[in-house]
Amino acid sequence: MRFYPANLNIEKKLCIVIGGGKVAERKVKNILFCGGKVKVVSPKESSNLAKMFKQRKIDYIKCRYRPDILKGAYLVYAATSSRKTNSKIAKDARRRGVLVNVCDSASESTFILPAVLRKGGITIAVSTDGAVPKGAVSVRNKLKEMI
Image (cartoon, rainbow, N blue to C red; front, side, top):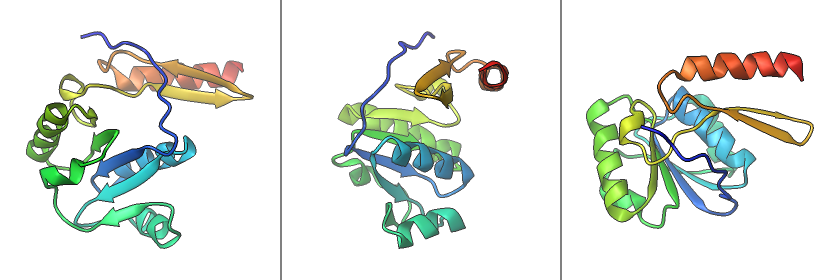
């Protein structure tokens, strides 16, 4: 599978992250960096996500995933620890025409994320089309040393 490279403008758009762990936390930080509105859905959240909610940086719904959670979403991240739940999220999002990234399955995703380097107004994205994410990170880190 090949993915079409693009940069999305998510400023002020609703981005839903389903999951409350470290992977979800990384997604939330990147969305906030790009000006997106974040809603996290999870029965449990990391201490950092709880802190962001208390600071009113994100919205948080303490519950398990339900399809109606996707209402109004521009994009969604399936970042739970359950393969079955992530797959259900992907199907529901695609049915609604919502962009979806499934953190443990590039093949179920409608978009994937490259390893990104931002420095001095330059953004460099490295992707392996989801085949070898650690390889993309390695290349990004080598580029970081060069710039």
